[in-house]
Length: 290
Image: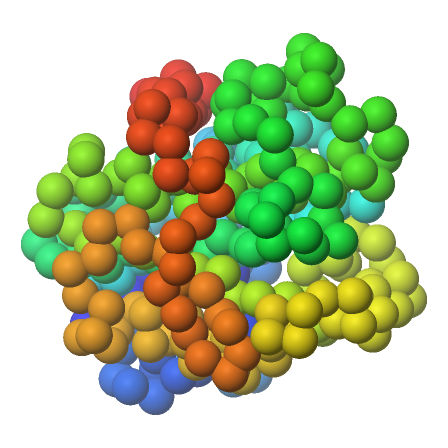
């Protein structure tokens, strides 16, 4: 089984990658620095350069994968910023890295996905206002305004709130992409995955080590008990979603950690808006040059 994965070098993504290798998978990963892999992956994976901050790098990575069929595509990498920033292509950086880069990678690799292949996009419960997480929830999925928040009249004014909303909205877009993709790519299984809140993953590294560590200590106390998880638990769930036959045939299903289990639930009202999902797909295509 050939698996291609982003977000495999840290946190629960690294744990999932180890479990997939233990299961006998052939794993190719994208990494900012392929020469400095975690010891658990060194010599066991094919690592190719990938910086999701620039769409040109995504295209280079896709081309470097070659023509062989891909059985599983795991789009797991993500970031959460401490202050607003712009990507190499001039888009709001969180939206660009978490959504646009993965959307482009999916579109580029679609012709190489084997019949019955499985695609998993990592989302987040923060996308749903009903969850009442400490993270500012989305208000829309308008790709043009998300790419250029200075044009968005609903944009948050505070720096922290703006960064939180950029993150939660990018995760909403991942979930909406998983729901829309089966309409365009029949014969492929699509799932989205909410890992719950997992401390010490490096997601908030942009805040600096001290703040990130404090957040990992404090935030779980603000979350519902069943919405917090651990690196091994969420990593194992991600590996299961990738290769367990129980998850075959998915058409945009949303799986969420409800500790200690993984449950298929309905995503937010906006994520279930078919017209909004279709618009996001089309608008994202224009933004990435397809």
